[in-house]
Length: 76
Image (cartoon, rainbow, N blue to C red):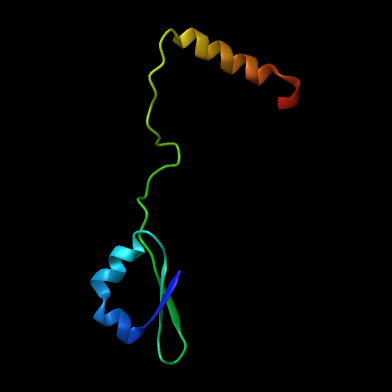
């Protein structure tokens, strides 16, 4: 995390925005207040993941695996 004064940040705003894509940037004002500039993450579900190609696995195989995992004693 890099720290810049307000004056530096004002002069290098475009560069700081590019840097904030990779890491948080701290901007410090004369009075000591600090602000963090960071990239806004997309508002997506953590379950929104890309699928995978699986050959030979049927819906019945998946249902059987889920039923098996739910029947295990460690689950209770």
